Every structure is written in C-alpha cells, then in structure tokens.
Length: 288
Image 1: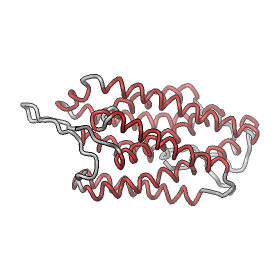
Image 2 (image 1 turned 30 degrees about the horizontal axis):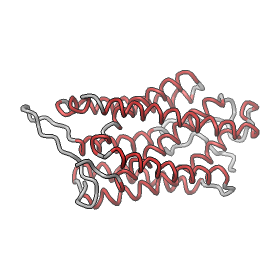
Image 3 (image 1 turned 90 degrees about the horizontal axis):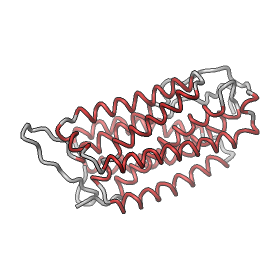
Image 4 (image 1 turned 60 degrees about the vertical axis):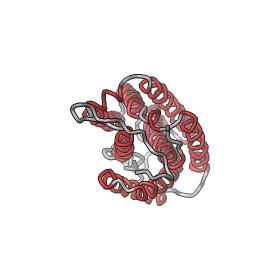
C-alpha cells in the first residue's frame, strides 16, 4: 500500500420495454409533480450524494498506525460498518413505507419545491456528517447519518408509487445478493482495487453529467444505458469501498474506530441504495 494513501479520499424515459410511471393530472393552478419526474430527481440526488460524500475529506500524515485501530481491529471496524449500514437501511425502509401511505407526494404534486428542499437537506446532511467525521465527532456523525437515512426514506418512498411492491422486494434481494458477493470480494481479495475504484469514480461523475442531461431530453435509450453503467459502477465501488474501509482501519492515526465504522457504513449505504435503484430501473415492474 502506498504511503500516501488517504482513507477518506473522494469516491464517492422509459419506453414500452421498461417500467412506465403513473402520471398525475395537473391541478387547477397547473402545478403537478408526477412520479416519473420525481423519481428521476431522486435518482440524480442519490448520485450527487454518493459523489458529495467524498468531496471534503480529512488529510493526515501518511504511514502511521494508531493503537486504537491496529490491524487486529480491522475486522471489528468492518463489522461495525456493516452493522451501521444495516441499521441505516432499516430506518430508510421503514420511513419510506410510512411516507408512501401518507399524502406527502400529493403535497409535492401541488408544490414541487418541497422535493427540492428535501434534496438539499439530504446533501447537506451527507456533507455535514463528513465534516463531523473529519473532526472525529462520533455523536454528531451518528446524528447526521441517522437524519440522512430518514430524509432519504422520505424521498425514496416515490418508488412505492412507481413500482409494484412485489417487484421492489424482488429487486431488493437481487441487489442484496450482488452487494454481498462484491463486499466479500472486497474483504478477502489480496489485489489492490485502487485502480478499479478510480475508474468507477470517473464513471460516477460521467453518470452524474449524463443523468442531468437526460432529465431534459428524456431519452429512453440513454436512460437504459445509464442504468446499466450505474449497476457496473456501484458493483465495482462496493468491492473497492470494503477494501478501503480495511485500509482505513489499519492505517488509522487517531480517529475513533466507531467514527471509521460510521464512515464506512455511509459509503456502503450509498453504494447499496444506488445499486438497488439502478437495478429497479432495469428490472422493476411498474404499477398499472
């Protein structure tokens, strides 16, 4: 491993063949927010969050090892990362199901600015959590990560309007299986995955740009291609991030191992969410 390794480095439309989204009719004032438009905005926001998480990372002296997270504790840090990730996904899922059974999206239909506010709050929570981790602030990191999980659950509830519940469940388990395999590879491989990670990060920013463009042109073909590339990018990032968490623990120079666990959990959480959403775009069955 290179001496200058930085564990907090940046990672971070449909046609008849693909899921169709139900359309809302405009209200008397002509304002509306249909599930397709809201879903596309949510996907774009997720991609921004994955990129933003690595935007402001702490720098520290290379090569040193801190007794608080020596090599013997690597597996413990990795376990904490997966545990925190699971809890965050549980909070997001419960929130999404609860919000889907309310009138939230009908409010968004008449006032689309609500969705923009939530998107901004999500990105702010990610950046804030990163800043708290940089300062080794465990409590604030946990609070902001939890807040992000709840906010994300609110905006992700749109998928229950666009897709059948059985289809969502099926794709979720497919995503979990793929994620698990790649996480295992990242945990046990001896090969340095840094180059793979850099390629995936470049691909991520390419997806960001393409998604932004496609929000305006609405090309079904481009949406399909973006979804395929998105799956490949987050499959690669999953393995890369797991290996990165191990390196972070082994080269820690003063960060609380719990903070590293939270950092890893947020990385893996974003990997899984994005992988799930892209698979849902490819294989999800739309509501009639």
